[in-house]
Picture 1 (cartoon, rainbow, N blue to C red):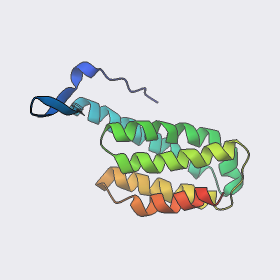
Picture 2: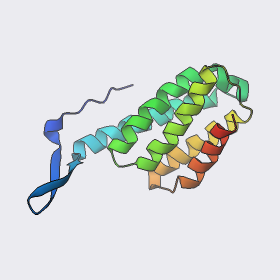
Picture 3: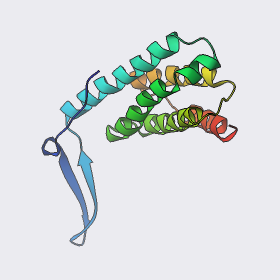
Length: 145
């Protein structure tokens, strides 16, 4: 597993001004950063997939929640930095669920939630699919825990 480091020297900023006042500053990530971030997220998704392949039910997800959470945590931070905000949102909710499991909760149906969410995240990396419906389902799952 690689560790993504980036330098702000390779980014560019864009200032949005009105009447000489700076209203906002946007950071534009380099193509190299996007390429590295894409590879890193794909590695994290592959890691989740490997763990899920070794699981067959909710109990196995409970046992592996700490390993899964490490992957979701990285995705939740990295995805928005490369413009994949909905991917970051889904990873954030999954991260919250897994933290609850690590704290002792045992929600029924987590195997299905993790498996379907993983498939949606992989699909989103491949074709920028709409994750909003999945985010709502996973938020409802979290709220019902």
